[in-house]
Length: 179
Ligand SMILES: [Fe+2]
Image 1 (tube, rainbow, N blue to C red):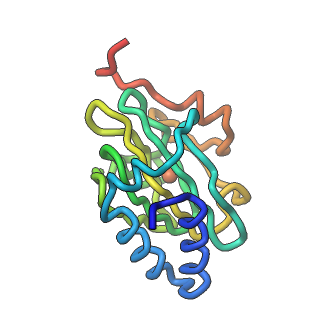
Image 2: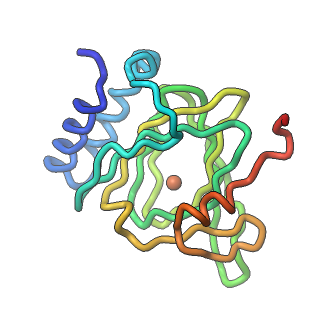
Image 3: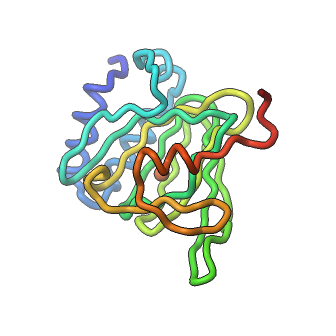
């Protein structure tokens, strides 16, 4: 049966209900993007980069597109996250934080067909690698929009509340990006 957001949301909710540890969600995501082209072909066109598909107390589900020209600012989630890429390559830059600020601590590029799990204490910045946007299904094990969490200034490491305004202001254009 062809991929639809509606069916995917129902499957994720079932997986979380049956296995709150998240293992069933991870397997569902691996199965879902095993044929990434089929997902890419089935999703409706979207004019925004981020589409909110579902949220309740237990799980939040988004469809997230990232542009190769911009890096979204380092941020935390305060809950486990799975990223299942179905188009392009999503570059995740990880940070650790101490009293002196934010320090880069590795990066992972997630290609179409792959799933990346990140822990509830992770801080990451995200962009698309290469010349085309990346697109992924993101599943968060909690009510993402209702959790108080921070963004971080990529230069100073200073935390600020996660708001749309701060998100826009701290999103960086890549130096290599063409005008
Ligand atoms: Fe994130």
